[in-house]
Image (cartoon, rainbow, N blue to C red; front, side):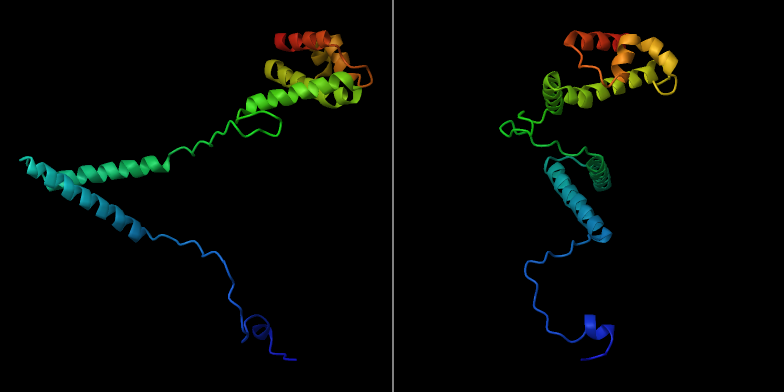
Length: 193
């Protein structure tokens, strides 16, 4: 057994098999090459434009054409830097995880809520787990936006604004689930806040 140290362990003389399909490290592009390519493009375009204008018996300064084309190239490069990300490809044939088609996320969210509310109609625990926390969150958000309070920061004022029926529904976790008309009345209260 050799006790040569870490060099023997990691970098010693050993036969290594070539690694197949190892991706090449990404090539870094040099600034000089980028500038040279752009100057070559502008120079070539200048030569073509000047040749066409001279063939049409139009005299124009080569420096003017070169400056105009260089300015155009700089504008195109600047626009390319601030371009928005590409839009996702839309596929109406592909179904979402919730049974919807396409990429309409609002529709998917509404369908999830519909299914959640349908399950809550039949199951008291589902109602307490899904509907009540959202109703409480909406109440707190509406109170915060309109009056600068939440149910926790000023319970007396929050109860006064929400009304006793909605307050009781939010705080009595043991009571039976609400009827659709009760939920509608609570939503009306929240909208009037």
